[in-house]
Length: 138
Image (cartoon, rainbow, N blue to C red; front, top):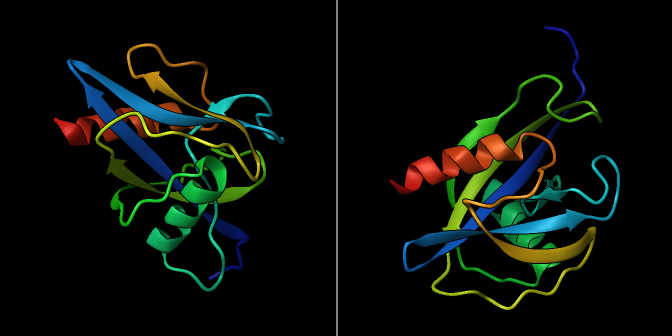
C-alpha cells in the first residue's frame, strides 16, 4: 500500500419544512477555496473526535446552531472534489422545527436559510450532497 495524504471533513445538511417548502441551511465561505460561495456548514475533522461530534462542532462554530444529534447519510470522496487535495467528506442530516436564528462565525461570513427550489451557486460538490440529502427525505 502506498502512502496517501487524505483528510476527512464533515458536512451537515440541516433543513426545515414550512408548508410545502423545504429550506436548507448554508454558509457563505470567508476563505479560499470558493471564497464568497455558499456551502453546507462543515469542515475538517479534528484528530480526537468522532464524525458526528465534528459535524456538530462545525455546525455550532459556523452558524451558532446547537443540535443534540445528526444522522449520517453519505460519504463523498471523488478525486478533485476539493482543490486542496484528497479530501473525503462524511455528510450528515438534521431537521429543525422552524427557521432557527443563525449567527455566522469561524470561517463563515454569513449563514442563511435557502429554499431548496432556489439555491445559489454552491462550493465543492455540495449540490450533489444536497440532492442526496433531499432524496433521504422522501
